[in-house]
Amino acid sequence: MPDGPGVTASVVAATASGLQPAIAVSGLAKRVADASGELTILHEVDFTVQKAETLAIVGASGSGKSTLLGLLAGLDTPSAGKVVLDGVDIYALDEDGRAALRKEKLGFVFQSFQLLPHLTALENVMLPLELRGAHHARESAEIMLERVGLSSRLKHYPKYLSGGEQQRVALARAFVTEPPLLFADEPTGSLDAATGEAVIRLMFELNRQHGSTLVLVTHDQAMAARCGRTITIAAGRLV
Ligand SMILES: Nc1ncnc2c1ncn2[C@@H]1O[C@H](COP(=O)(O)OP(=O)(O)OP(=O)(O)O)[C@@H](O)[C@H]1O
Ligand SMILES: [Mg+2]
Image 1 (tube, rainbow, N blue to C red):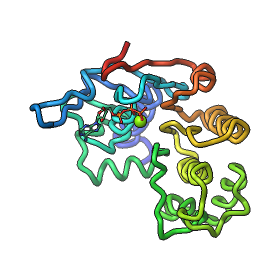
Image 2 (tube, rainbow, N blue to C red):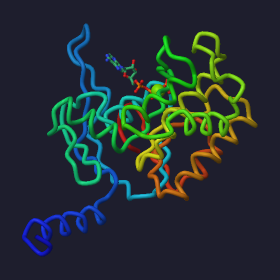
Image 3 (cartoon, rainbow, N blue to C red):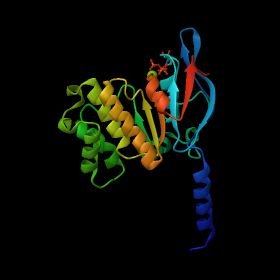
Image 4 (cartoon, rainbow, N blue to C red):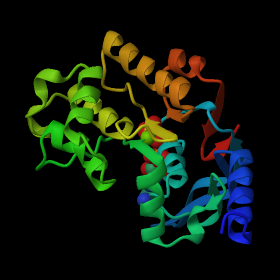
């Protein structure tokens, strides 16, 4: 059925997908219950990020940056509003749908790393490849760990790695699948200047080579300055 309606529809869908922004956020808000009633962590925010754009999210501690990044990645649930990733309204999906989308499209570096404690550095980085059924998971993971300077720590468990080493394993794990969306929460927060610079180079290289859209939460003015655009959050609002 080379010319049937199904083919036409899929071509149209593919074309439309090419024109979608990578991220479209509208009316996104997060409120939680607290002792005094309700606490608003994120007031309704709206913004769009184009494909292959690099965006820095900056703001004081406690302003809502990690909350926003988690919502963009489908790791939390909003109180109101929408996050549309490459044309897909992620909170219209169920948990499984969001997990499938994350596996397919997203690399996420947590502020607290979130490595799996019972897996070695190498196994942590192999995991997203294995979940995708990739061939050569071990070789690809080794190459990525080498790029973050950890070739000599492959068999270490997270608790035997320094903070900066754990951060680099987390980065390798997020990047090893070369995802179209790369979200990182203070990716250089625990790194010395030279290692931080190497990691920043790696992230921008993936952006250039693969057209990955980069969203970085950072306190580092120099890193923010290298991004195409910066948005600032203050007390849960975009300023
Ligand atoms: N589940 C929750 N329940 C109650 N308060 C929360 C919850 N999650 C976050 N907060 C509060 O919301 C605010 C924003 O938190 P968030 O972690 O997004 O800040 P941040 O900008 O990433 O800060 P930092 O730069 O210190 O990492 C903080 O005051 C935090 O205490
Ligand atoms: Mg944070």
